[in-house]
Length: 176
Image 1: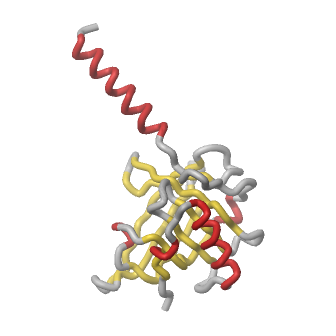
Image 2: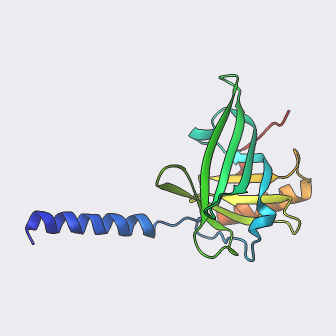
């Protein structure tokens, strides 16, 4: 094999290994197990989030999860952009990283690029959820209603802080 081809092959292998070895869950976080996918499907209201580019200036944000025909989960995120004064929508897909009874998923809104989506706390009735991204830059508190009980909120904030999140950085979302 020519040196150029050998170097190219080695670089491709290194890139593939690097891509697949990236963690999809923050250190110290554990995905919910057992997890019931069917109970998680449906509409969720975003109560709080770490702010980031794709949700900048959004309020009234929701996520609706449904099954695609190929077994992946359709992700339909919507929110009202307060600066542009119009609704915004992003549609993506999520897949389980491991077994479907472990709430460790990866989500994509842009072709082959995925990010971690890990349910790290959920109540028995699947009404409230704490979701961690791939790193401590991403965290969401979700509810099936436009509010969340104070006791659940305190519990989720404490869990997030124990993992290493700076919960004072959370944006609390308006639903009006």
